Length: 633
Image 1 (cartoon, rainbow, N blue to C red):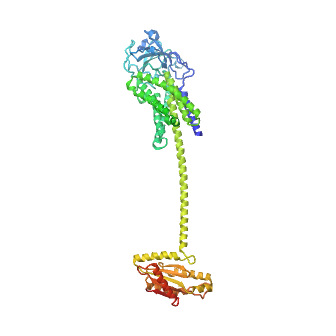
Image 2 (image 1 turned 180 degrees about the vertical axis):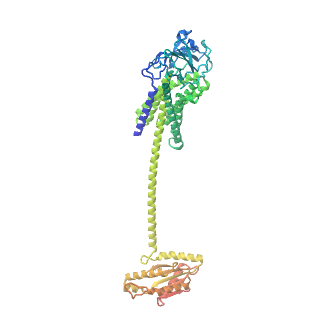
Image 3 (image 1 turned 90 degrees about the horizontal axis):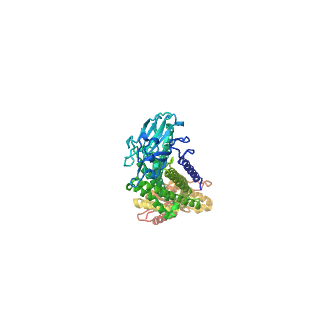
């Protein structure tokens, strides 16, 4: 296993562990069941958790809010905040599935709160509405804050006719009430009105304490949610860009987009941030949003298992079918929202959550078995998924106690896992691109080198071919064209003469008494004579003329665009001037040549022309040599 995978896994584990600490954060030394009129000094945020007084179906007036002055002592029950409430104590019947409850507690100012400076109250999370009274210690009760009268009018007598519609109370998340300056001996009376259901309760205790401390506590919690919400959006944008522009693992990136957005929505809801984007959000609406985000994210996560662990699901088609069915089930529950009331929806939702907790535990066992059996295959996804399942189970246990975690570990672990997977896949893809780029550059260099070599070899081959062609058409001794070059050139000139209807003459020159030269002076001197003759012909002939050595001491001269008279005159000059050649070592030696000239006739072949020129040369040899004879036939 690579080192990068190890560090990614360690980072994932540490990351989730840190937030597990926040999710399970409670004051270690606090008294969980403290009485309603006491504040636990070990808790920094002064949680008003524990037993509260309450009456179901009745709203108590301010003057009767004390236990000693209440007219219905037999109706008073104790309710734990946070926590679920006993169904019997709520007075729920078959005809009335909903129950209204009036809660109150009296808090005496003592210890840090005794001066009453800059005190504030944070109402918790799911309270529909509340009132705050202050007992100044002399029997005077003064109302300092009221959001309850918007829904239920205030009265001196208990109110039994409560609103029949669903709770329209706005979600008071994040709102904190600045209390007036209080004096020693005063009591703060908190009176909450809550429309709850069989499966409900107060999910967060109110907080009473220094305004700065409460505000800092709330901002710290919101800042974590905002931080991860922004991170979700960044991962979603990154994954969307990868899904659009990369060809590999497009399904994985598309799943990451959906999962990141789902986790962001979940954090937006559970972090109480939704109430700030939707100021009129009610308690019931928040219930729906909470369950919709949870069930939607659950469905996405279950359906995405086949993309996260393809090796596990490809070999198990039945397991893949089961995962699809389990992913569809939460969606079906969401589709039932218009058909059932909130009470029935919550019952179904809680039942489904317990079902999925059991299935999650079985899935963890299955993954552990798979990891033990195949310890080196896909172990990072296994660890990440197990952390997600454990985090989801812990959050479910918190919700089962009607207590919200500091930050939902299920969404955080899921987002972290997806982000790590996307970054890991993206980093692997980037490394692959870098490697491909390096290979491409290396291949380009090799191609350029190969092209250069091929070009160099081609040039060498062309030069060699030129040398071979030159050697094949050049006489080695005189450096004049040879018989092969002559044959090619005469055919070319004949074709041009035919095409242009021009004149053409052919002359054949032969050195006189050349055999005697070789016998008397030697063959080396004879070669020097031939070379000197070749140099003489090249200098004295026109640029358009062509001279070639035919063999021995015989030379052929092609005279394009030349009539017989001009050719005879030119050849006569050659015969006369060649006698002036001087040879080193033999100052008295002179060379003579005989020349036969013939003019090409239309429709005449090269063979006929050559034969007539050769015949003229023969006549020149027998006419005394050193002369020029022409063929007039």
